Image 1 (cartoon, rainbow, N blue to C red):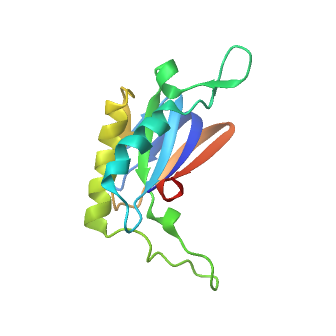
Image 2 (image 1 turned 45 degrees about the vertical axis):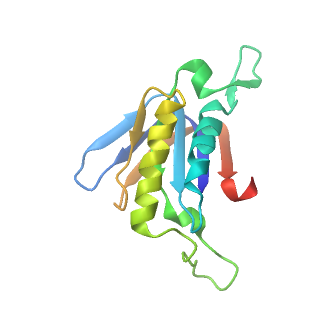
Length: 149
């Protein structure tokens, strides 16, 4: 699994039906399930995401987490993080997990974030064409990849 995590002042997603989900300061997490991902790593990925010390303390040092500050998260499914760009100009997405499995992992990840202590977790809709808006704070962008663990 891969999670691209952005520290944001705000983030929102507009769904195909025009409805909108949004958060204030917190984490925008683009989540990707990759073939062969071990579901037992979901808990660790969620805890690491929630506990990442990427928010500034009073001295301006990245020393606080979304958990420490009681912040929110917006989780968006993002199969394109599994893109293979080694050959040619057209990305290959064969490494991304099958949709039914990926959807299950995506929903489970959002639930695990709540269990990890992020009290308000908003999500997009798996498989939809969504419009995401954000104000990256910093900018701070971190990639977590469970294959590296």
